[in-house]
Image (cartoon, rainbow, N blue to C red):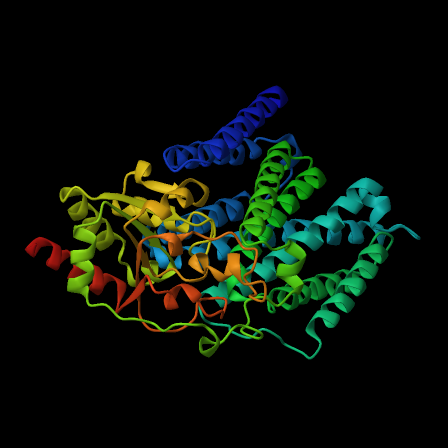
Length: 470
């Protein structure tokens, strides 16, 4: 039986790793999700056969929890709108961190109950020193990820907009961190239930306080970081439970999340430290519209349609505004009409377009856009100087040329799409406001840029009608 269990865990680990590899490409991502899902189901079923569970009497509760949680996740996954996908990812990721924290809490409270029967004993004596350390560190990381992810969800969902809770927020965060570390050290030899409760409460509070100052523009990096922390916490608690599947799955998720966080931060020319403690995403210090040379010039949908109909190449740059307008299907219909007129059409995706990594890729795939028409920033940027029209729909900060040209801009150094270098730029936008970072966009004031105001889906529909008449 033990050999069968270990072999099943090994197979599950292989499926996790292969599935993650498949997820690295939009073409194979669906297959990767299925493989990883099969691995998770296998690991879960085999765990019920683990000899260490002998004597456990709450199988019914475990099965009910799996059915309720799995059923809810299945339903939400099928019905969630693409514009709400980042919120769902943040929420579900938080649940993973919370689960790891709950496992640590059970182990710590169980150890304390045993230690109270042994004079002078503590958590480290009952669990052994290495297991106690791993349990406490996993408790800290998982609980922090839980409360931090919930704040990220609330911010993305528009339910929570504050950037500070108390004066001198960052100093308060530092003080909380020092206190939590002190309590964590004390837990090592404690037999006090109250001390464990205080530790978890303060870590929950720290997660809230750390995430609250993170600006909207930085939220994709924060979500990715919490994803990495959740994986790490699961791996650590797997060590505590001596569960190979949890160790492997947590390690894979943690390492992948860490790499993604680094790539996201690099795409924004930011450090993770600066994301958490820099307060970026607030409008303080941003360049005002009055300081930018030039003026915004409006274009009508009929003139924009004519310009694109006679273009040699059109590059479409989607952003979160397109997701909000649910305009992806209309945009693809527009692209198909342009191709019927012998116009070459490409889609340009910035790594942090939208509210999470891959958001725009999934959105376009949902609309039926072929993968070979979707290009990453490094692939498409050399094409912009030879592009007749760059059509920017709902994107803002990721096409701001000040990120390259203005050292005083908060965005300076952030890699951006070079839409500004196209022969003509048409920007579909609801109004003249700033992007998520609160920074005014110099692209909108360039001589080769014209603004097409209105709801993304409605404007795309108008462009389609005008093209059909040509």
